[in-house]
Amino acid sequence: MTARKIHNQIELSVVHEIDFTIFFPQFNGIISTWHSGSLANIEECMQKIQHVKYGEEVCFNGILMLKASSSGLELGNCVWTIKGPRASMTYLPSSIFVSAHALDFDYSSLKGNDVILFSDFSSLNGMYDDNQNMGEHMVDETNTFPFSDSVFRDVGIAEGGNIKYLCSNDDITEEIERISFICSCINDAINSGGSVLIPIGRFSVILLLLEHMSETLHSSNMKVPIFMISEIAEEMMAFTNALPEWLCKSRQEKLFSGEALFGHVELLKEGKLSLFPHLYSKGLLAAWKEPCIVFCPHWSLRHGPAVHLLRRWRADKRCLLVLEQGVDAELTLEPFMPLAIQVLGCSFLSGIKVGKIDSLLGLLKPKLVLFPEGLKSLCPVKEKQPWSFLYYSKGKTVEVPNLREEFEVRLATELAFGLQPRQLDKTIAVARLRAKLLVSNGQYMLAPAKSQPEQSERHLLHRGTVDPSRALSALQEKGIVCSSPADDDSSAPTDRERAISVTSPGEALVKVASERTTIYCDDEKTAEHIYDALRSICFDFDSDSTARSSF
Image 1 (cartoon, rainbow, N blue to C red):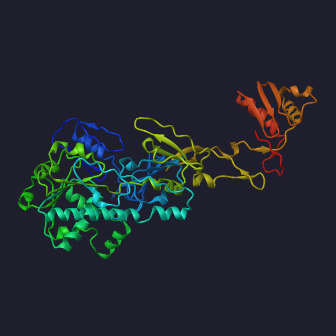
Image 2 (tube, rainbow, N blue to C red; image 1 turned 120 degrees about the vertical axis):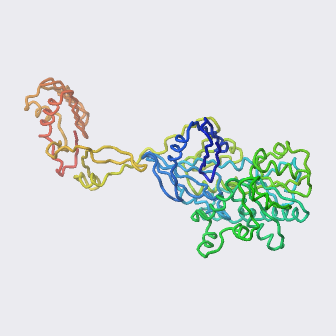
């Protein structure tokens, strides 16, 4: 069988029945394994996938509410908000605040969540050094291109300043400059008679490169074929028009004005860009012409069309290979040595810069941040931060403390209208109810019980002061044999809890305090008898007495 991933969906093609394992090696360091043995098993699993729209809130198992919002990094890449009855959490993967193609990072929907699971590991790749000299990107095959940015912002910046800093266009301006520099290098390689191989897997980078290539080719009047060789090439291009709500505002405006959303549309119309599923596709063999520009998998240079094309062009010093930062160039290129081909190492905006983390947390105001252990040295804890940190690492379980001592419980409408509250004082009213506790849409709810007792069967609530000596006589008047040890202690404080021991018609203990009278008895009939005796000396619930006692 074969498996391919199309923007968070897995498409499977089964050739014959066989046990198999599917790996997702870049899912936050976790390798998932799926065992199955038949097409029916696969279809059953695929039916469990639930499609979620942008901003749509969905319920999982009644207890969790999940909502996806744009991370700004790629079309369809999500920041997840997970809310339950006891806490709310943000799952924060690699994100960028301002994007040239995808909808901007929607940080406003994340404000006030209790916990942030920070899962942006892009800073660990060392991509953000100040690189003002773009020409330094042009290196040989052994260079590793380190970039990092350790500039921290003051946490005390006002919220307006935080927003202005986070949403500045500086990052995207730098990104466009990088793309322009890459296009100029591609142009030089084509002019010298060489071909260009681009095994980059990030969809956003491919879109931006194609867009700027379109402008470069048009301005220079160059006629060079561009090939995209991938089993999902056609789906990728169609995907850009399928989800307009995930596009940035400027591209959404193009949609409504009838303009092409991306530059590759014009390239396809003019026949300058051709899409093929395989290197051996019949149409590709007929259209092939060098020099050319080829986008194809895989960035690892271990499988896919890139392996064959690199072997074809590796000895030609006029050709150009474009690799993305984060790839170990020396290890990746070792099987193809010796190399004469030019190698261009490029870093692209792939997550939140270290210097913006504190400002983002100051804007979101969480109570707790779960932070990668590897980023601890890059983002040290500062004094007087209102949030605390817990550090996690691969394979270790982290226990998250309870952040809410109290939580809300909602009343069902039917139950709420059935309440008969009684006013105790100007600020407090109480009512009795019989209900069952449910969890629905991430919230606790009290719903009507299946059977409600008749009003006449309910015990009334009473309030008032209960004098132990009066309680003793009231019980004795009902024929209840009882005694109170406090009778012999005349010096005891009047507000002390008094106990009355009942020996007949059954054993019981009555405790009388200034705020509450409690009956302890195993026999229900005896308890009812005692209750009836004591209620005769208490005020009714509607009384205006300010002193209260309940039992």
